[in-house]
Length: 68
Ligand SMILES: [Zn+2]
Image 1 (spheres, rainbow, N blue to C red):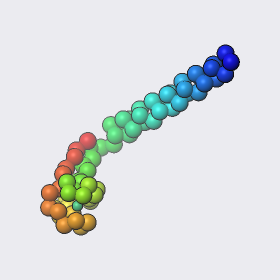
Image 2: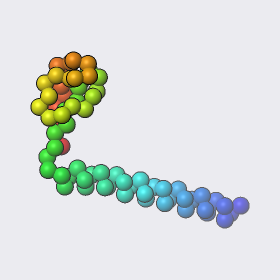
Image 3: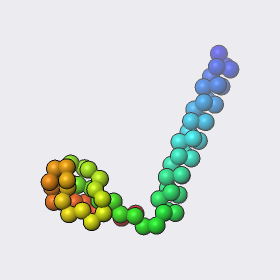
C-alpha cells in the first residue's frame, strides 16, 4: 500500500516537471524568435498571413493583430 502511493507520487512529480519544461520551452521559443506578428480574424478566428486585410474564410474585414 505504502509503496504504491510512493510510485503514484513519483509519477505526479515527473509529469509536473515535464509540463513545466514544455512551458519554459514555449516561453524561450517566443522570446528568442524575432518579433513576430499574428493576424487573426475576429469573426471566425482563422489565422491569416501577414498584411491580410480581409479574411478569405468568412470575408470579415475585422482582422486582429497580435505582436509578440
Ligand atoms: Zn474570418
